[in-house]
Length: 182
Image (cartoon, rainbow, N blue to C red; front, side, top):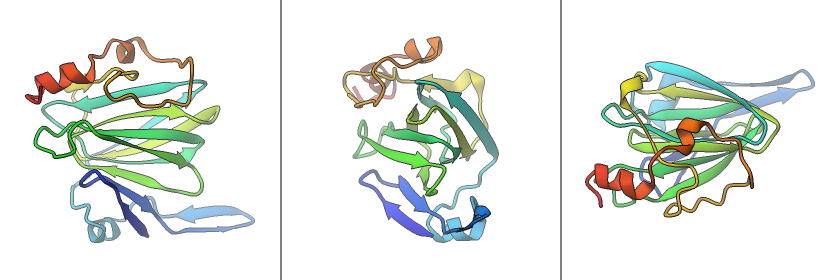
C-alpha cells in the first residue's frame, strides 16, 4: 500500500494494492495490521455507506463532542472529496485539502478526528464508504455551510442539489468562534 502524506497533519491518502484481470478487480479495503503500519492506530467502531446521484454536494459535516476519524473510499462513481481541519489547536486550523476519489483506481482518505467533511459528485452516481472511529450521535452533529466564502472551495457543480440541513449550516467563521478560534 502506498501512503501519501498531505500538508494537513494526520490527513493521509492511501492507495491499496489492487489486483485486476478480465473478471474485475480485488483489493483489501481494510486490514488492521496494514493500516496500523501506516500510522492509523485508531479503532473503527462503525461503518457507513452514502449513495448519491445527480448534481449533489454533501457537507461539511462533523461531530462536536465526539469527533470521528474517518477512512473514506468509493465502490461506485467519482467524487471531489474535501477535508477541512477544524481542530482548535491545529496549526492548519481552517485549511482544507481536496482529492478526487473514484471506484478505480482505488484511493482512500484517512481523516483523523477533528475534520469536517464534504464531497461533490463527479459522476451520475456514487457510493461512498466510511469507517468511523466513534459512533454517530444525532445530538452532536455540526456543520459548515457548503459554499462558505472563507473556505472558498471551488466546487465543480454550478447549481448543486444540497439538503435543507446542509444549506442551513453556519459559516466557518461562526464555527470557529464556537470552537474558540475567532
